[in-house]
Image (cartoon, rainbow, N blue to C red):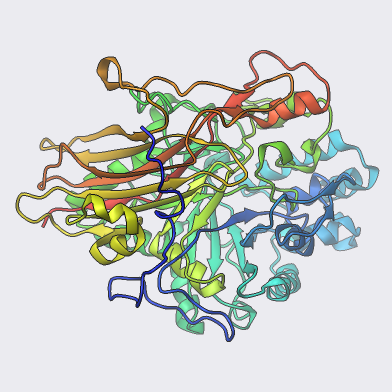
Length: 622
């Protein structure tokens, strides 16, 4: 059912008054930038952007640099790697450029024909393929480059850290140049690119709270030094101790890790300890739930009763397409990891998988474009043109090979920050007060507590902060006779599709120590009624594939709810997050099909339901 007449109330902060003790701590906003008492609106951005300064992107033909990327994100028109004009419909609020630390600074030297570089036969092939303009050969060499990095067989010239110094200084200086507190935030970052075992994706994006004066005091960590996440955390601790700054790590989507993202051992195969779990929880606050290379929220084989689990699946292999066994799924997906973390907390005394929700692109074009009708692809070689849908994309020649049509039009992350500044955005990430979407800028709020009432829906934000905890937080043990209640509000993207439904996804550990899950439809659009087994009928479908259009004649602009867990057991650990689904809309492939007047293979999906996921709230007994 749709709640009418509340639009604009649930997601805003009007009339909140002074900040109560329960609200998040104030940061240190730059002069002239005001911080609100509460986060008033979500700030949308991208934590995962590669430019032509990343070796694989440059090898594929990307010529964009960090300035191009920041200019596009902040609202300017730029020229793409294939010479086309690109502009976002709406500027982003913030962005992080995360060029690879491995080989940082070397691709420019190879492109310039530096004799030290091209004395190596493979690097000479890279140089010649880029100089010739042969896209097919460049793609082949790029895939070999990724494989060599995975196997630890890169030429010694690429691993020499001397090339990184200048590139890192330029990168962070550009971020400072485009950082405009209160208007657009340019965060400093890089990617630590662990491809263990020939392509098991265990990458982390490293995000700094600081400006270049602190970030310049270190060089990024590379996998030439270590592939062990515990050593990454030690590097992060050393950075903070040296500079007084702050830094966090965001693991990539786990679906290409071939079972290693949520493995229940250390990286080297040792037993997990409480110290390990606490370290992982401290330094890794968020995880990519969705990006171009598919989704890591859930999998149909793990959640057979979830009718919406089968979407954007990249589940045939790892980053290089090496084959996957179905038994690997359990330790790849976020929802399963959240549940496993509860179980491990019972034995270790700490939860190693306490991850909030992150959405990003992982573009290697320097173009962060996550709208379906303005999708520029992962690489320069799949920027918009007729026939790109059928091009082989990754893992070519291996069991896990992926085609271009299997790309998702990426994701974005909404951050509930009190100002558009580096400090406030970083602090919100640190609190896990974030939500991921598959691209649309819908707004979602979640608060949990024991004393909410129906009247709190009218002042949801004030009530949420004063009487409960926001997404990313921890519920205190339940008072006698009480179950947790959840204040939920979701609002459509003002320029996008209406909403279908709001769901609560619950995971818990039962009395026998097994993990369980259940999905609750808590609010929905229209007058639908649950049928047999409580299943809600579909919302309908207004998509016209001949024109790649849809209508907002169905769905709701906003859905709000006060929901109480009907099966709460105060003795059982539990985790809750909210999932919001839009009505069906055209996929990027449908827009391409109309734009380029082509007919795609029937297996290519043309319609989907975009969605959002909040960071969870965790419950632990006393």
